[in-house]
Length: 369
Picture 1 (cartoon, rainbow, N blue to C red):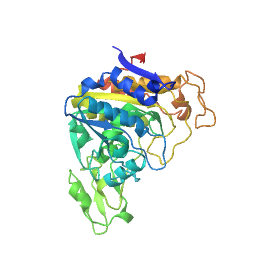
Picture 2: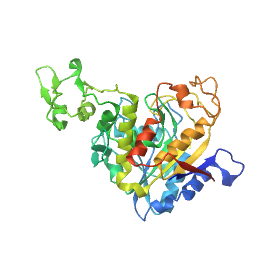
Picture 3: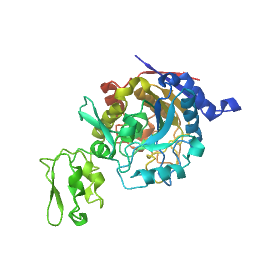
């Protein structure tokens, strides 16, 4: 059975056709007000962008969603989880500061910012799932505890997954830092001896009692290690090596399972809006935004994360690719633009696995408003 995806293009010739107004119309057309009850705490999940990047969702457009949630009776808060990599969003203090500097202040958006997995990414809830890779996933506590969620996604490329949209926003964006390690690689962590200060911090957080303190370094017993990744995110000197190496299909499937865990307990309380604008070849986690590979297309909304990602990909592929960008092939309308940037990556693996999990359908009806 096909899902409904509502679409509006970039054209505007009057005040009532402005992009902010179009966001309002999409919110209404998709029936998101019905997802929100009086006084419910509603997570507005988005990516605040890294310092130096400019392709993230415009805070002026986010404000429209915040206002609509309030009109529907909800109490919105902006949220994301901390990053696994070393950057400006690896802890909540820096993360919130970066968000404010990128325009997501209370004065602009009229909603507080809550980083869902806490100060250092240690606040999470384990959500049971029946996945191929995981029996349970670690979702940031404040996202797991929210009554509902409106997920705002910026569609773009990604060096590992090829494409990033709603599924990536849910999976990588809602998992805590240890969960991000588990999504990125099934390899178990290792200690870089030269960086270890033998401070015992990792011992306190290891749930498997797999870490032994030697005279000059810590050592991880891989027979006991369960690969949870918690030691990698608490080590104060980053002496425990983050594992990045993995097959892209496996990463996408693990990411889809985390996405499923993020919404599994609130299936009827989640709406999705994807902004097919500023379609960069790289993720917003980078401290830059490369040239866009297609012209801006528009905005889509749905209650189905699989359908909205499929529609976003199809709409992007329907465009003429832009020259003098990272796009090296597939310039013609109908050709796969993300394959044109990452020819070796099967970016549809995440959609196939999400559909298999029961998250939604790749079949959709595009409704223009």
